[in-house]
Image (cartoon, rainbow, N blue to C red; front, side, top):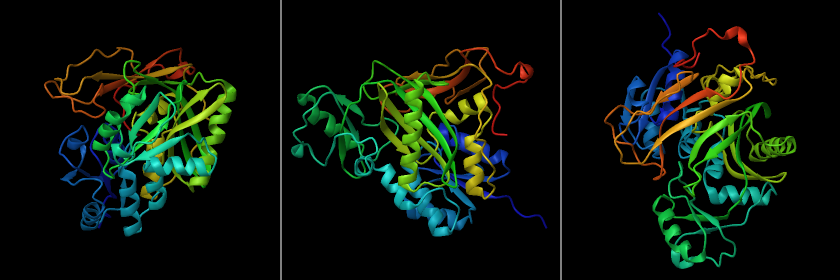
Length: 390
């Protein structure tokens, strides 16, 4: 009698979770998925779907127990990680973080407090539960965010005191906890650090430049470039800071993502997440270096960990990940893909309506293309477009 396939529960069915579903199936898993609505490119890929809000921990746990899931995970979702940790702890499943760590890093007020207390890139901030209690905020521009949302929902820039109340009121609309946070705005180039931890050590840490829409104040992402153009001193400071934060947060295994800015050589942390990012940077890193952070993450929760290389040898001089975007509520229009793209993917079918996430410019797909010559010309004939997790 053959043993059944490992059964994994993926929280969410959006584009980042579609990556996880495809990779889990390539690893031989039976894939279950839950999300609040039956929509998104991950929906038709799962072996079974049920409409459950991913922040409803007890309902997700009941589902995982009913189907005797062997693993639970999510990609690119801040709000999913506390549920992942809760379910894994209750069922004795492998998980790269504890529930307390997941909750602390997911809540932006608690994250800022942790960074300040540990002297890890502290920034002035204030939490607000109602507009009547607005603090006497001294410095503008300032960033206003919900404390517990994701995807740019409710994020905006206040350029003067007169704008603050309206922006806080809007941010509160997107907060389940009913709180918003005001942070000092850091004016400097944006970049990301994606790292993978094994036994508390960073086995892979890759910096990419983060390109944003200049027209929108909330950091709506346009794409990423690898390798980053940040100076060597900034690179060293960023990696040292990332390692310190991971250590102080108690992160031992799995992926961790940092969104950062730098002013001169000084590095500031904008976001920290104990997960893979939501911009498919795992694929950009895989194309550049051959290291698959997504597969490594899934292998960890499935109990099949492997070794992540320290020495990442680039295959190209430079790669770009470019997002296709449209306004929310618009009918999806297919945008042209570079014929030489190494990989491309669209998140919508013709005629579908673009869903609102950040409310400004929503991702409808992406492509990865060369921005410089390939280092290893011996693999030129290999077809890369559309390849999934191996």
